[in-house]
Structure formats: C-alpha cells, structure tokens
Image 1: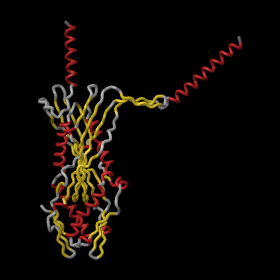
Image 2: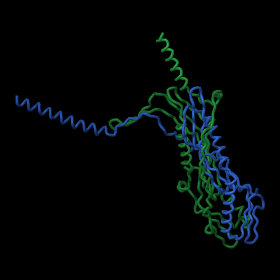
Image 3: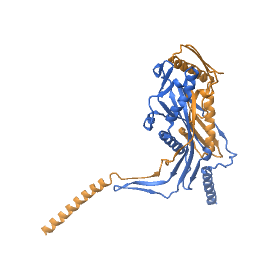
Image 4: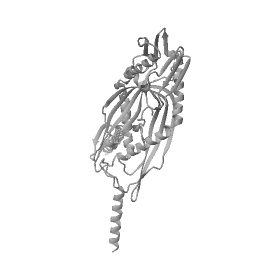
Length: 227
Length: 196
C-alpha cells in the first residue's frame, strides 16, 4: 500500500515539474492565455536634456534581416592541430527583420561670422562638416521567426538583444557605403538657399560650400553613435 | 656478468632520458591545447537595404535622451514569469523648415523678422529598439509581448519628455541660435517668433 502511495506521489511530482517547465510556443496565431495577467511594476526614467542647433538634411530608411544559425560546435586545438566539429545536438535558427532611420545633419552650434563671406551682393556660407547618426531603430517583432530543435531551449531575451545589437552595429558599419553625406550636402543647399532668397539675395549670388567633398574615408570620423 | 650489469644500467638510463625528453616534448606540443563546446555568438553577414531617401529640413534645438525600464509580470498557476527590459530613445524637438509659410521672413535694412513653425517633436520614431538591454527574464515570452513592452516604453517616454517645459526650452534655444546666426550675417535687429 505504501509503495502505491509513494509511486502516486512521485508521478504527481514529475507531472508538476513538467507542467511548470512547459513553454509557451512562439507563434503569431497563438490565442491569448486566459490565465495570463500582465502588470507593470517597475517604471523608471532617466533623461538627459541637451540644447543644440542641428539642421537635419537627409533621411535614409534602411532595412536589414539579422540572421543567426546557432549550431553547437566542438572546437579547439589538440597537438597544435585546430578542429571545429558540429555536434549533433540540434540546431536553432532565428531571423530578425529590423528597420532603422539614419539622418545626416549639420551642427550650427559653432556657426559664426567666420562661416560667412560677403562681397557686395554675393554671399558665401561655409558650412561645418555634416555628420550622420542613427536616430531610431525598430524590430519587426511580428515577423521574427525562430526554429528550435526539440533538444534546445528557445532564444532568451539576452540572446535576442545581443543579435539585435550586432545588427545595429552592422548597419552603422555599412553607413560609408550608403552615400548619405553627399545627399546631406546637396540637401543643405535646398534648405538654406530659399531662406537666403527670402532675405533678399539673388539665387545666382548665393554659394553654399563645405570644407571639401567627403568620401568613404571621412565618414568614419563623422558617424555619431549614441552608445 | 659485470658487462651485462653496465648494459642494463645504460639501457635504464637511456629509457629515463627518453622519458624525460618525451615528457617535455609532449608538454611543449600540448601547451596551447584547448577544447571548447558551445554555440557561435556572431550573427550572419546580410546586406543592408536602403528603403527610402528623403530630403528633410529639420532644425533641432533640444534633444532629450531617455531610458526607460519597462517590465511585465505574468502569473500562472504555480509560477510568476517576469520580463524587464531597458529601452533607449532620443526625442528631438525643433521646427520643420518644410512647414514655413510664405512671407515668413521680412527684412528692412539691418532689421529682420522671422516667423518659424511651432516647435514640436521632429520625428515620431525616436526609440532605438536595437539598443534595448535585457534586464531580467523568467519564463517564456513571445515577440508579441515584446511589442507590447515597446509600446509602453514609447508612451512613457512621450509622457515624460514631451513636456511643456521642454518645448519652451527648445523655443528659447531656437530663438537664441537663429539670432546668433542672423547677427553673424550682419543683421543688427533680429526678431524671432514661433507660430502657435
């Protein structure tokens, strides 16, 4: 009799543990769990306010699909020979679509008389170097796809954040290839020339100039990252 | 008999020397050996595609950088799941020069009057979600849950940063910056106003 009681208790404990560790399947079509109640408990805020005078002249919207093939690998060196073997424990794959907004701007905070040359009716404005920054990014959560083998755990929040941060860094690294500085230079004139015309200057007498034409080598110094 | 003993001692000594040499040789050969078992952490290399290019004329006078710790809790029969993330964003306050009205600049000799559009949030997309840091996670959470947290962070940042005080500070700084610029151009009497 005692054996039966112990056996029943053991079965109940195992079932309880299985229930506690059961995971919710990540699917878009999943119906909301009626038992689930989500509440906020810790709102916190830190802000930093900064005065500035930046003229944003070009906006690029870019898209990237971050992919990661997560395979367990046995790698190392034995007797000065390297090896890298795939361990058949099951794969995990994830694809994270991401959109980002890049903007180029001209910082007018140091703008002064030295940036202006006037000769009679003619005016030349020498603008500071344009800079580029990523102003926002958005993960397309609805279209995130992950495939996880039965033997592996789902991607954790920390892992997802790590891949997203790598994707963000990859977009910033691609900025020199996008030609955003050239667009920013051309668009700066589109904003400033009408303003100077309204001030009474004739279009033919207005020159908006930069220190130089910026190439891919220059842009690395002109990217502003907010990390 | 004596010779045989010497031979045995010689062979023994040789074996000992060989063992010592072999030990140090093997030690040197294996000094950099290591074996790791784990997943790759790096993402794959994929292209960055440009979706659109836009000419803009946004003049930013105040930038408000914010970080919000947003969390959610879910109660199940025997357990409590929690997810907490830190979101980062920068709200940029200023004027959109594409919204200026005809006759917004009036000049007369060394005087100039400028009427700029109302100060506002330059871009509704201000959260850098890819910078988000995980703070705590227990249980399993879906992409839909993360989207809900993002929207909460958005609401909180807007509520905390898009304040009347910040808009006034942006307007004051805008006046100051435009005054400096126009005085650099030679105007002595400068008047800057904003539409309401």
